[in-house]
Length: 305
Length: 249
Ligand SMILES: Nc1ncnc2c1ncn2[C@@H]1O[C@H](COP(=O)(O)OP(=O)(O)OP(=O)(O)O)[C@@H](O)[C@H]1O
Ligand SMILES: [Mg+2]
Image (tube, rainbow over all chains, first blue to last red; front, side, top):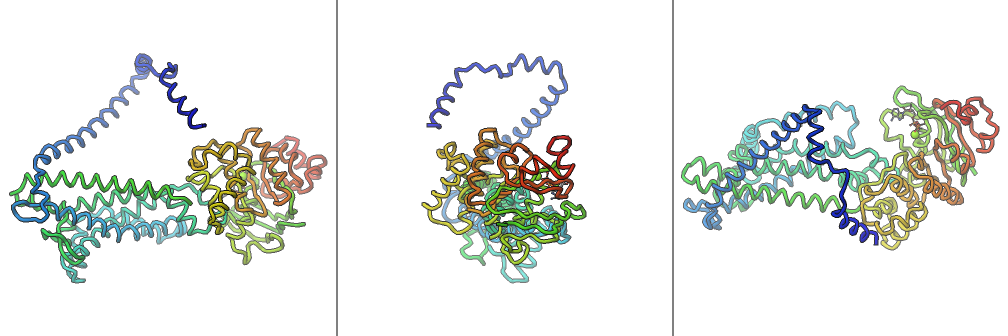
């Protein structure tokens, strides 16, 4: 009943001539009085337009160069040096992303929960951890690649492998996930915590049922950022995951991710067209993973208490 | 019968001495009102009764607070204490979930899983908080979309849903219109038979209308505590008289 009345109201809205609409003429008059605010509007509108234009230009350029090269050959089940199929790399990238997130997300989110919910506010250790995380987030990925190569590939003797690549990338994205999660937890209002404790809920229940669901969009934003870095990473992978052209069939076998595949193609200079096609695939992949994450976020956020 | 007994209680926020040697014994099945100017420590005292002050870093309490003769800062499980002593906060704080899940959160916390049982508790609590008719068609909608007054009554319903023995209300009606305020006051008078209610209010009329006993606070001290009739008709302390006749505060 109530819903129906709301709907009819919405239908009526079109026929109303609202007096609170600001007409073009009124706006011009107000700008004449305050030319500075017009200038401000022009500056911010121009910035928005230029930023959007740059992004759209790159997208359109990649699509124009890439789409004609999306031949069936490019998606052949198996790679050979004629078809330079990116199919194995697509699967490798998805598997690598999953492995990396499975390692990094529990640790990152767990550490953030400790920092935000358990550690005392002024704790020295917490401050040190936070500073370290910030520093680590800014280190070039090649440094992680070097470390991964020396430690996972050689010291642990895993060789160029999915495991070495995933662990290296997990360490690389850990600070990002930790920081964004902590940020998300801190912005959950204390009144939610008070409400939950006030009803006799313990700390664990409060965190799982109230705080994490409220923080979920922020946490997922961090994970999406991490996914972007994983999918787009090359330097840290070449020396850990390697660049074998087949499917990485088990955790200790080498493979190449899509970005590495593109890098190799471009580097060799023989398959530039296919490199463009691969770029389109990469775009679509990132878009797909992000959409999926947003969908999962929504599902998780709607869970009941 | 005596429900809460506060003896020689002092509370410090860091170095700030917020409550000074408070002695206060509150009766069961009665409504006790805390009055006093802003910042005098009413909310602070209320929050000590269900240990919500534990969450404030640097908050130190000395003295003794007993519920039914049992020291609440002793061996009592704090979550059980909070189930026995429910609270409605000064600012409405519904959880970002549906109306139904808001009310069911408390009972679920304390182990009630049966859907029928939960349905019954949700309806009963919302009816008690005088908001069932407004919300019965929007139980699945987010509680954050409610008006401020509706949110506060939802929080009252949420507190009632865990069937506490004592209900602490911190200016629970300050955001409500006169009609809903009237309903909540009626509710308090009705609940009195089964619950003990301790409320903070800035509204003298409200204290006068519904409370049995009133405590007047000033600058962290409890100045006077007596039956509400006595406080308002024949205050013993000059400061109490000045406050209730509106000469300061
Ligand atoms: N978490 C805190 N940390 C430090 N000081 C606090 C804290 N909470 C309250 N105080 C201080 O303790 C004193 C009492 O605060 P309280 O909130 O109990 O007052 P109140 O009587 O409820 O006032 P109001 O009527 O405005 O709600 C105030 O001086 C306040 O600044
Ligand atoms: Mg207060």
